[in-house]
Length: 398
Ligand code: ADP
Ligand code: MG
Image (cartoon, rainbow, N blue to C red; front, side, top):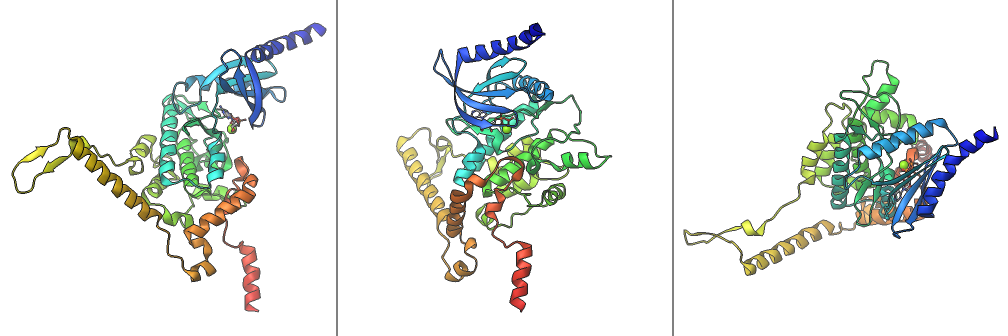
């Protein structure tokens, strides 16, 4: 018996010993259901990493799950927008996964600190997310838990997709049936598969749906399908019921809305593909190549092609910058302040709205919990609750 115990403990100690011999663990970076993530330093090089320490003692399923996670991490390795797995130490009670460190943490916390992202920043982030997901899919893997908590940001605010705990490698044409992920990001087909006997199952398209939910959330700070009652939220998802009617959307241009409409399509077969999404006009930035500009001389038949003319190039650059500044100023010109609107509906005024939302997040930001709660949306609620409305109206009519 004593022998058996010794056998059980031996490999553990070795794995832990090996890890601690090579790395020095530092402060906590994050915590999951059965894992803690700490910053650590490789003793030999002084380089920083993030170690995900998984406790296997609670449940047998964790070991299988972690082995699958490691397998998948190795399948999707080698892309700039996917987290890099550096080292693995395995024992029967703990597994240590050593990852590249993302100093800027989760996109979730970044969003909470800035409340909303501009169209330009959203474009920057979403392009990388789509390219990362495209790579994951190209390796036959579906992620199944894409959300701002699982998108990390490195030193240069570049995206690193992480947490492959629910990811699955699919055989050609294989459909999945199990319910996993985070409620607010679940695709309609995932929910339907679990509700209706004759539902066909789901596949890669669930990640594209989640991208739609993420993009919506980045632009206005709150998620598209949130409802205090989770059942209502799930029904809204299955019906694809969301809107661009909140005041935040009035300042947002048509092209991101169009892309979101094409991402949040209930039927996965009709949903836009990643390739098409990356081709969408939202991601097409204006290209101006000064070297190819042709200048037509008025009054002469001569068509002059400018090869390299430093002076002309400089002049064009100045004109371009001046125009850009003007266009930008135009967008940020404050709306005329109407005292009437400010009195009756202050939230309609962008400047006041930004102040109100900013204050709410500064005071209550720590309440915004991760995962299923989606209570970020609660901080954006500016319409009275229906039950309160009844009381208010009843009082009015008295
Ligand atoms: P879980 O499967 O438990 O959700 P994750 O892999 O998502 O575990 O990690 C949990 C949290 O730890 C992340 O949401 C993030 O805050 C932090 N974290 C994970 N990996 C890194 C990393 N490489 N760099 C910085 N922080 C990280
Ligand atoms: Mg996670």
